[in-house]
Length: 268
Image (cartoon, rainbow, N blue to C red; front, side, top):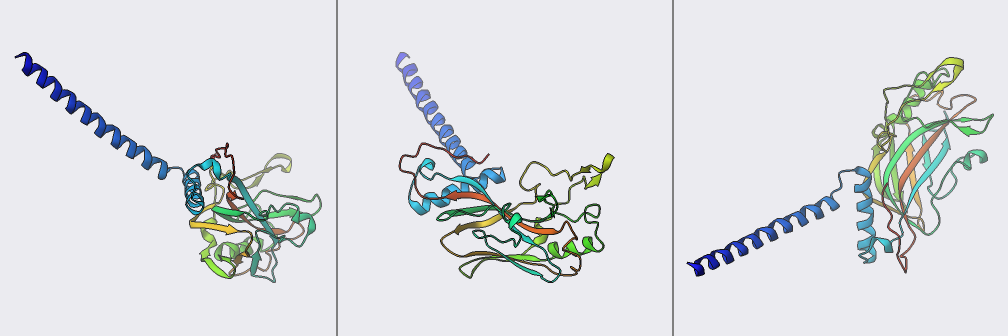
């Protein structure tokens, strides 16, 4: 009887050990899957960025990449005589030198992983020389010049192409994908103080759209974004405080492997 008890105890121990191994192995797989397929769009884009450069440069540690979050902002004056705008993420696009100082372009000798793209417009205060907040929708309270509202539809009725060395990366992607119309519209309150549209905290709330598949811009090459407007645009310039086309690229810069590592960038 004593030997039987010992034998049964040994069998139970083996079964328990195998069961624990099965559970832990599957938990590990689940955890690994959660790391690869992130539920948050920003972290998912960052994960794709990390995997792209790790595979390209054959490294295993994220700290060797030295990735830096970056937003590229391109600005161009809208004109009622032009329905096609070519923007360069590395060189100045605006004609007005004051507006050029508000552009944020890609630095030399980097690879820029584009996670999100945004197309919208801003008003430029020519007197005080500053930009009003970016709009990702047409608002009749904000676009008050005659026919200005109807003219702005041409932007969101159009599309965008992205090219590298004349090779198409994105073709005829509709600008309507970038339209975000918040519940709270622009309005003037007491003493003519503006109450601006209420956009949410996420990139999508702010008019960004995910760039997929993975889009990497090498600044050693010629990169262009061509925005085509379609339809009526007689008053798209917007009067004295005129309108600017804005295209933003949100992502991460890679400028070469780090020798010592030591940093761990996160998408936050």
